[in-house]
Length: 122
Image (cartoon, rainbow, N blue to C red; front, side, top):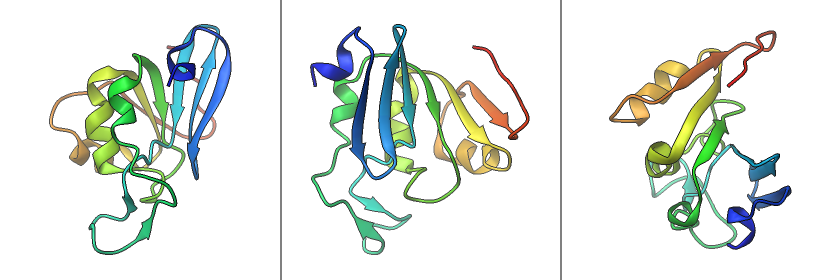
């Protein structure tokens, strides 16, 4: 966990598509599926090969951005998003995902909806 809080540039893989990029003193989290099951219900879906990683969120520093690459349960996890929402500057989601994402959170977040041709500075 020392690495995810380090100021040094690094890449930390959490399994499947979830990883943290630390670059130029910015923290960027991609596809935070850190929960135990990639499914909207706990009794179905692919289980993690390793342990449930939701508790690692408590140890993470402020995240400048979270990028969701697409709208599949193994990339957009309800439990992970709700644990992360208070420590994220911006959430970047692809076009068409914003409505579903908004259902995940119970308070306003900085949500940026993108198409492939968009550019954004934050």
